[in-house]
Image (cartoon, rainbow, N blue to C red; front, top):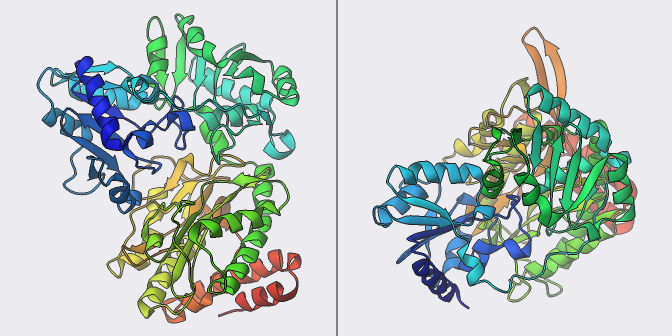
Amino acid sequence: MTSNEKISALREEMQKNNVDAFIVYSADPHMSEYLPTEWQERAWLSGFTGSAGFVVVTKDKAGLWTDGRYFTQAPTELEGSGIDLFKDGMEGTPHYIDWIISEIPANGKVAVNALATSHANWELLFEKLNSKNIILADIPLLKYIWKERGEVSKNPIYTHPVERSGKSVNDKIAAIRQKMEEQEVTIHVISSLDDVAWTLNLRGSDVESNPVFLAYLVITKNDAKLFTDLDKLEVEARKQLDEAWVKMMPYEEFYNCLKEFNNEKVLVSPNSNQSIFEALKIGNEFLKSSVPGNLMKAQKNETELEGFRKVMVRDGVAMVKFLYWLTHNVGKEEMNEYSIGQKLKSFRAEGENFVGESFGSIIGFKANGAVIHYSAKEEGSQSVTNDATILVDSGGQYLEGTTDITRTLALGDVSDEFKTNSTLVLQGMIRLSMVKFPKGTKGVQLDAIARLPLWMHGKDYNHGTGHGVGSFMNVHEGPQNIRKDLNPQELLPGMVCSNEPGFYVEGEYGIRHENLIAVKESETTNSGTFYEFETLTFCPFFKDTIVKEILSTDEIKWLNDYHRKCEEKIAPFLEGEIRDWFLELVKPI
């Protein structure tokens, strides 16, 4: 079925159920960013494959709302679908609820799948729609037309031992119970997959590139219950859960368990799915707040940070070998964006404890580099030659940690304009790497530092500067970030973030430079405590696209010091021609 045919079939189901508008969010019952295949409803319906965005279908119109990362990608994937693109966050783009209200009749009905709708979205929908006498209903219409969703994963659930996690399951649950006691709650429901996995020191592979497994966790004052596919638990995982007094329950029993609670005060994230709230709303009181473990997870302990440091060297060696291969073979042998991504994966796979990619590699040659979350397909991938620029954004999952790195390089002669823009992006990355900031600073207050070199030339980029990164966990992790949006979460020691400003010229090229950085204490002065960043990533930048005159003396010093550290960390693992090439690459500018 084409997207047009799927939407026609959906409209037939809408008519049968007297529904005027149906919303398809990009979500699963755990509100994951990256979804198991069987929950990729929005992608199946629309053909749009980005990680963020949702579709609204009315009786005669359809629209996709997505953010600036996908303004270039979305029109191509939506072509011929009958779905209009609404550029979320841009001036003139209506809020999707206001658009729905303007498109459907008074006293109409809007439907969603409550399992794939966050409580926060449900509440906002209900409030706005109810003010116009429009009904909001839980009617999962797609189950009637998408009948071949694929089978749920049977991949094993295994331990992430304390030697790598740095904290036992018992200690983590005790810390969570302490927070529950402070907040005077008796039940805590955890539905986000990374929070479940972190709390229990377990990992899986139910979601591509994310070492998580489908599960819910319920913690009370006296017990804890894990709801998952019990057949997937390895022997050591069962033993670890037994030792932590965690009961193992079938995944499908979760909602029945919730219905048994009465006269309880329940701590649950407003980002949990609406079905959880429906199961608990009779006879219980809610404390709608972020889960305590989410912030604990974000502040990496010293064991986790040491794991990052180890895998960054391992990953840096793989990157250097890859970059040598690419620059020395492009134009001599046939290659395309997809095959280059596979080659990069093979270099990482040579490293100790490599588990897989941390996300699908973004290999953008020429104009494809301007597609911020570009994904090259195996069939029809663009050939790569030695006459343009290429953006390589990739990462690895290792047992000790997670990596995410971007390098943009010239595979031939490039314009002075490209070199200037590449240097401005690098300058922003360096400035953020060098910054000191007082305790209590939020990511939004640092975002401008990375953008300033571009802003001074009337340029900007449509994505955040930094996201949190997990420890052998999801490559995108909250609650911290560094972006324009106001996020009240302050940056705290142990938090790991990406540092990735960019610049994109649609139809020509894209530039992004990215390292991972960790917050650490710097000094305490009469003005208070100050923090700074430790740069974790080790991989050189290509000097042939750097305009030295643009950089300040301090910025040049930072770059030369960084390259010296790259040499110290990576050179011992290289030999022969690759080592000679690398040593030339890291010489001071």
